[in-house]
Image 1 (cartoon, rainbow, N blue to C red):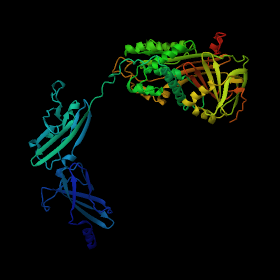
Image 2 (image 1 turned 90 degrees about the vertical axis):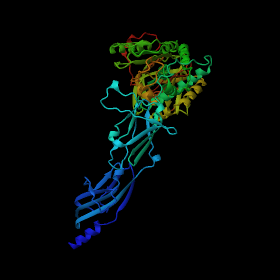
Image 3 (image 1 turned 135 degrees about the vertical axis):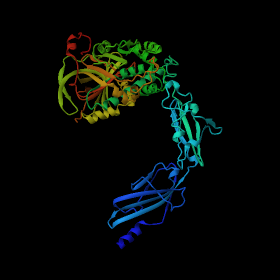
Image 4 (image 1 turned 180 degrees about the vertical axis):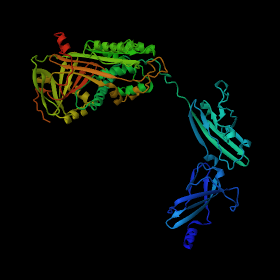
Length: 634
């Protein structure tokens, strides 16, 4: 027993008092057991406290209502200053043990300069400036003297108004500055209703209770409300500064070529090795029409995606010029349907007619009628090559923008009529038999282009257009990918420029007979080229008359049609074995990339790739009813 008493006295009883000093408002946790490696079973903890005002530590301590091994003060207040004792009793490996810990807690005031709060709010929000002092005692605060002031060099006194929860709306006090709770609750926090930029300033709260003084300084920053979304964004599209300059057309043609290469690059990286077909000029025409009503960040996004210079005002004039010059050989048509409850700006309607030859149509309350209206327009403009662009039009759709491109180009010399089944090697190495086009004497330019890693042939068509077929030097997915990786803006222009300088020669030509009709999710493609903003409250302030309504792009589709037959090429859109050839032989009976290029627009009309000619889509009924001698077999 004596050994146990000696051990107990040795471990637990000490007259040493720890001094702990903390700033008011901080958080503090202290453990009852000061010895780190002591474990107790069935432990009990008793915490006692002697306020600092009682300097006689022999006085009776107040037992705290706390029996946990750790004491937490959060936040530390002046009334927490004083002497603390904790006694822990429990069973250890050496028997019953009792531990005692003493410490003195001093609470220090924080310098005024360290108490500056920063309160940042938006205009018209409610500002809350806290002022709840950590008082040393439970003094009756009804005798407290509280002063609020605003300003630094010349403070202005503030008088918060009384407010209660039962005040009716029509009886609310006129003052914007009110108490949050009120002095009766020892809380001098104030509220500033409907904050304005003029409320930005330094605010000081000074509370005096007896000999105690508490000060808080708050810097209030009120961010001005953003200007109306459509402020200075409703004006018509600005005129081209020099309509007769030839440089504008060159800029647009270069931009359309860059856009085409970028668009195809983003499309093919998401489509595996399947057949592809897209009309870059159709997508570009649709986006340029949307650009007519776009302002601010949405205009910037569209110009960047279209590879246009910033604030390029001559785009629409050039698009009209290209459409007018090619209308006998190439149809480019735009149309818009909108919910009449929104209304369109008169300037946008007038400029749509001027630049895009389009008068907007109105959507109806019937989804079926809207579907029929859209599909009928597409069918007419694509000469029935595309008869259905949409299956449904949701009731929430308030705006539909359409574009259609229709192109027909005949071979300058048609292929022979006797269609024959010939071998076509797919990327997997399988050999399949497909209908083919053959000519023993076809006039074309062909060469191997090392920068593309492909054999390139230029087939002249009527209407100042050409069909470029690019055949990789081996039949493999890697070779096709290499070709498409190299098909960037610069190499595309270089190919057209170089092939234009080659003399045409008679060649033996073999091509797969092809017909493609491919639908593309244009929405995801637009996001991939940097137009995510169109789907998230775009700035179309120059398009819609209602400045408060926000219209998002919810759906975007592109349908393209391509036919390669004995008579020529017809196209429409609504938005490893090594091969060796002699110079006078060109065969594309393997996967290849194709481009329809128009010399007048100086940009691609269609781009795509054929990896399997068996994956064709068409309507045999249309073939039977097709007018004979038209030039291209559907």
